[in-house]
Image (cartoon, rainbow, N blue to C red; front, side, top):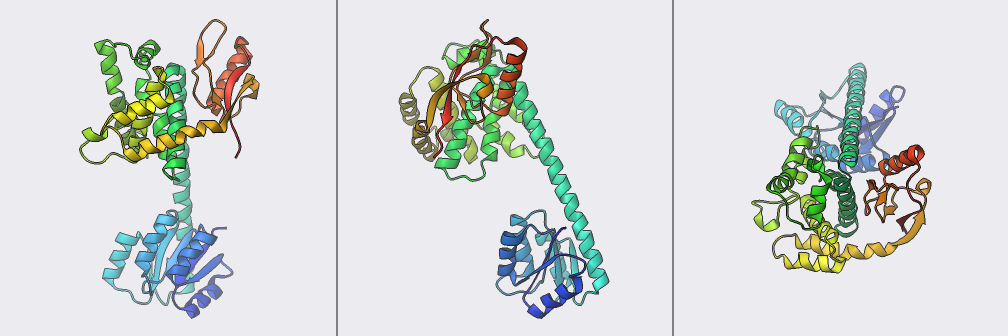
Length: 374
């Protein structure tokens, strides 16, 4: 059952509320805003949080603003004995308060308002879960289409995702890496319809036709226009749009995720053209003003992470998530199924197993890099 938190700086008021509501709702109380935030961290999430308006250290509006940052789905209310119109307007505008009540509040009115708050919380959570499922489904669909229509572009996106995620988490200390993972995986979505042979020419540094060059140069904008239509993907779309922009050619600031992508994409391209990791890194360093120095330093620190993998040979049925496919996987007839260098995610494993079950013409075993547990 959903929990409710009351925050007030008077203990007798909190005790009275607990007595009045103990048979109707699970109620927690906190003496003042500091204890209130601690309760949210330790005992949350709460469906409804009701705060007094006048409290020491921070008032109820500031408390509810802090609460929104930590628990955005909690429905926020004010219960105060010091009500005025200006305070009510400020609470609604700044604290996004669902209900503004005055003391003393009759028990039947309080119960009704709290039930409305719980119902609002359920609606918020349902909407968020639906959006998350829709968003995840959209991302899965786009990556699956990229893997089927352009395995070369999908392979590059998979490699870039691995490097970018490791740099962001292990070297730059980002704990929320969803945006960089998604942006990296979708960074090549604008190349979905570009022929694989054209991409091979790019990766090998060969000359392109004007049409091929135009297609490749426009792919960040094409990816942006596609992703920007999906709800809650606006930030990812902007990162994809900026992925090829140099630091010294950008007016204004670039998202950190776009700065990471620029470094990793150029690094991966140099590796594809036969450069060693050290040669590729040194070439990036010589491009003065192109990259964020902190991201370049993070890439250099991260290159040692490959030492935490060991090379093995496994059959298709033994592939597991987080293994990195070291080689191109082709059929006996030479058809490319999976390009080397990408992580064996669920979609890749499923595709290989399904193909093996139907055709049985994939040479085994295959070479993989397996993470060494620390």
